[in-house]
Image 1 (cartoon, rainbow, N blue to C red):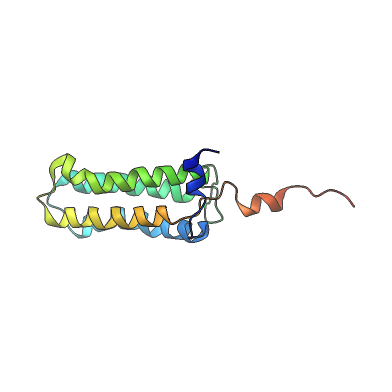
Image 2 (cartoon, rainbow, N blue to C red):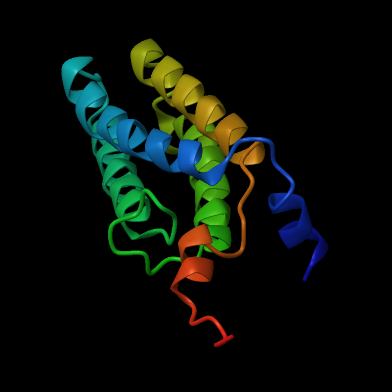
Length: 138
């Protein structure tokens, strides 16, 4: 196991809590840019795309809160880190950093998601997988 994978498995936040937080994050990324009426159209659509991605991760991760359970938790963690950093730097790269509402939204959501990702314990397997294995006969 690489050192980065070992680091991802040492967090203090249980995967269940992170999995529950993924659903409101997706809703925030999809709905709030519409409610806050961003001046920059790019800011609205980028947040919407990241919200759809967050919803797919929430539904598809192999955690107790996932519905489909096809995405490995460690891959979920790497995707979360990438998207969180992207949320923080995109206003400056795309050019809507002068739109205060969009900038503050991206910085707060990106920083919050990054902190939640860094403190999550991305366990390599779900506890339910251990329960599903066949036990040896006595």
